[in-house]
Image (tube, rainbow, N blue to C red; front, side, top):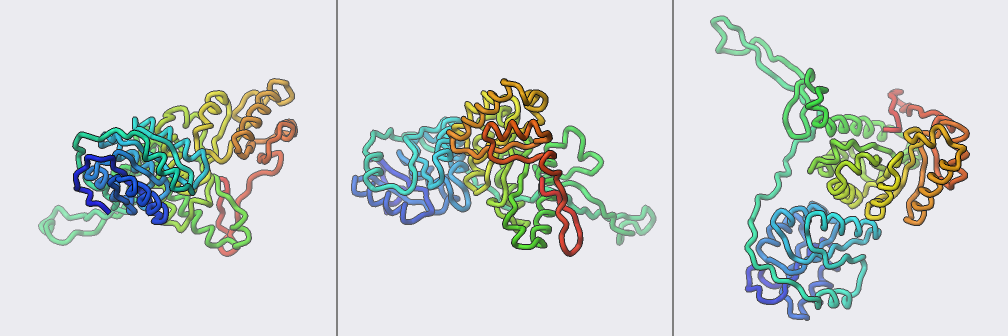
Length: 399
């Protein structure tokens, strides 16, 4: 392998992939073509290595331990990267398409995307394309601090002293009280926690409490019951727009012995449309981490469907209670057309279609007629609490 500080008068290639077999395949191809190259298997070193090596072309895997490919894209954007990127993944095409959209939103250049596995001739064809030379120096930045505090309740001790002659000696006692460690690391007293100015800062901590309860309940469940459950979790927009949202969620799951594959994260259309570029990046990173994602559609279906093709979505949920047409005029031709069109689009895109808040027989018959594959709501049975066998503690399965 070439020294990363060697002269760079010829096209240069960087390979960022923890899969050594893929990395070696690309490395052998580009070396035979006379290109300088470097392979990075530790994603945490990608930013510094890029700054020193200054490649023209970057083969970037999307799913890696440490930092995923979309985090690295954001880091490259911060240092004004103008190399050509080639995102790679063995996941479905929607993930690659979404990564392409994220890169464009960050003003990064993407030559193409690669679906694994691929052959050496594909690599040689890409590398033979004309590549612009990177000519300016790039700033080195400090590594991210990984010692972050998980948000949630925090127990505080405060010494209480007498104002008498012995005030400078031992405290009379220690005052013990709770504060809330906000998502930004600051402590908020409980009396101020639900002020409008602090609501957004409490989202991750509240999620942590719910996941902690879930982790305890899962450990007490019968394995046969546990294997049949999929946990649906509605993600608040205040949480999704945070830069550290994916990191925080992964930390919360790790702390409670939970796996991303157990969860379907529900994201409603208003959340998506409020900040589409940033939300799309977060959704892509969540999909890469192994979460299933459900897009909840109620009213603004045309706008949502126009964006759905580039989103990493596994399921399209239709909220019948939130849609005025489907909640009150279920037997109209308009309702048939609206729901039927939505289901038809979803099927063409390979998405599972479900309906929630099916609370009447008319709604159920409409969903069935239009081809909705799964439904839930009071018409089919009210939600209930899971009763743990040992302590009878209740947990709502609909988080």
